[in-house]
Each structure stands twice: as structure tokens, then as C-alpha cells.
Amino acid sequence: MSNEISDKGYFGIFGGQFVPETLMSALQQLDREFTAAWNDPEFHAEFERCLREIAGRPSELYFCKRLTEECGGAKIYLKREDMNHTGAHKINNTLGQALLTKRMGKTRVIAETGAGQHGVATATAAAVFGLECEVFMGTEDIRRQALNVFRMKLLGAKVVPVESGQRTLKDATNEAMRNWMSTSENTHYILGSVCGPHPFPLMVREFQTCIGIEARQQMLDVAGKLPNVVVACVGGGSNAAGIFAPMIDDKDVQMVGVEAGGRSMNLGDHAAPLTVGSHGVLHGSLSYVLQDGDGQTAEVHSVSAGLDYPGVGPEHAMWKETNRVRYTSCSDEEAMDALIKLSRTEGIIPALESSHAVSEALKIAPTLPKDQIVLINLSGRGDKDCNEIQEILARRK
Ligand SMILES: *Cc1c(COP(=O)(O)O)cnc(C)c1O
Image (cartoon, rainbow, N blue to C red; front, top):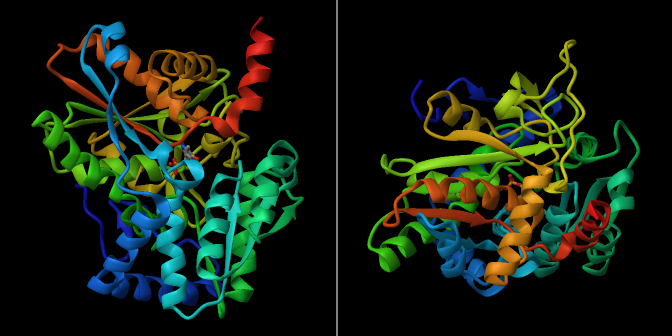
């Protein structure tokens, strides 16, 4: 298998469109419209203007002087997606898809959300473009993420409670897809990661490649060479795909994706499908999935809500099997330790999700010589996690 994408939306054997017949016409329309937009210089100009004026791009490339000295090995750099408007990389994708919604002449967007970060980014883009917005969210997540629920409402979105299953992200995604079946005439579904049926994995990756395109050039400008290792956390896989894809053909750049190792590596205690899962279909595409002995999608756990998902984007499944990217996991505890370390050495409180990437980088950097470079995609900031962090630290005492 090579790292190739077929025009039917397969990444090697992974991906595809495993959806009910009633969704096929909406997906085909989206595929057509995205392809046309992505070949249109005017769309690119408009997208780049939005990234600059609304998201605040380009994001900085930051050298961690003190952290590097403490580790005593490779130089550590951060790609500062935490500095984007709304606090993470998610806004890159929602701006792209909101622009596409306008282009398709649709007036309403829907989205799924777990922690609420994608919901807030979608509500923000909808407000900017004057689109009606409904966000599907499990009632368990609504309870845990009250502040983000309030932010979405403040931004003018309607939050639709989902009562099925575990009442979390997987269930919210099912409900959003179901809603789209009967509303696609005037509604676009803004999916939040490189998951779901074609063309979502391809489209979301393209909207997120601004991260890797900038980072690649910034490394050349600042250090005169590309990084030796790029590290990113993997939930659905969009921030990782965004930084990996533009350097995937740079054969000397090693890449590491870090999944949520949770409480333990027993099924139900983590969210690491690439590390210990198996082939399966979830939300319309073939990829790696966490499943029990009967093939039922397993329950998952992570300290970071954004990584708490039993599946992963199909392109990552391909990169795993071609050995282009190494996938590993780090535990809740290790992520917390890395969060505290980065806060105290650099004055940056990272998101719990991003802390998984920081943790892995802290393992790698000391093993490498001082002239080498480890680049971390710092996908988001930790402000949203402060309640959670406070509770965890109180339990540790
Ligand atoms: C949502 C989120 C993630 C996980 O999503 P990916 O699609 O894997 O990038 C990671 N970091 C932050 C800060 C997030 O909000």
C-alpha cells in the first residue's frame, strides 16, 4: 500500500462512504462543490483572508528555550495553534466549511460536539457568516461542559441535547448525521475532524493543512532546516493530519501521533484505536476502531474530552500501515505532568489534548543530540480545562 488517495476517497484500503442511501446525494454534492471550490483561486483567497482576519493566522512558531535546557537534548519548538481565535485549531476547519456552505447557497449548519470546542468554533463561524446553527451534544457532555454550552448559545447557536447511548460524542455524531439526512437541501453538516464518510476526511485535512504549510516554512526561516521529529495528539486526527500532511513527502521528517492512553490499556479505560484497536467501520468510513469481542464499538475514556473518541480518521490508518507515522499513547497522568511542566517552564498552559503531544516530546527530546529539532503541534490552550485540572490536582494530594 502506498500513501495514495483514490478519487473515490480511499486512503489505501481505508475511508469510503459506508452510509445509508439517503445520505449519498448530499455527500456527492459536497464532494463536487468542495472539489470545485478547492480548484478556485477566489475561494482560496477568501479562505486565506478569513484565516488571517478571523482566526488570527499565521500562528507563531515558538522556541522553548527553558524546556529545551531542562531536557538537555533536541531543540523543542511549538506550533502555537493555542493562539488562534476560540483557542484551538478547530476554527481553521469551521471557517473553511462555513465558506463552502455560503458557496453552496445553504443557510443552516449543524455540527456534533463532545467537549464543546468544535461546537464553539462552528457557532463562531456561523455568527460571522450569518448562518443558522444547531449543535448536537450528548446530555452527559452538556452537564460536564456547561461553560461551552453557554458560549455556543451566546454566539447565537441552538444546542440540541442527545439522550441516546453513552450520551457523548459518538451519540451526538449519530444524531447529527440523522438530522442531515432530512435537511441537506438547505443544511451543511460541519463535521469536526478528519473522520466520517468521503469527502470529509480529505476536506477537513485540506482546511487544516494551513498548520503544516506555515510550520514547514517557519522552520526553514528560523532554523534553516526541517524538524527531525513532528509530534501531534490524535483524537479524530485533524490537528495531526494538518501538520503531518504538508511534510509527509519530506522523508527525513519523522512523525509521531499520540493517542489517549487514559487510566490503563484495558478496553474502556483509554481512547487509543491506532495503538490497540482493529479494522472497523464507524460513522461512515473504514479505519481503526475500538471494539469489543462482538464487534460493538467500545466505551472510551480520556482525561481530555477532545481525544475521547473510539475511532480515528482513515488517513491515519493508512499512515500507520505504511509505517509513515509512528503511533503511540500517553496516560492521563503523563499528560497532566507535561501540562504542569510546560506551564512552569514556558508560561504556556496547554490544552489537556495537546499535553499528550508535549508528554511524548519530553520523552523523545532527551534521547536526541542538541542539533536536532522536535516540533510539537500545540493544538489548543488549557483555559477550558482549568476546572478539570483543579479537580485532578486536588485528588492527587
Ligand atoms: C478537538 C481537539 C483535539 C482533537 O481533535 P483532532 O481532530 O484529533 O485534532 C485536539 N486538541 C484540541 C485542543 C482540541 O480542541
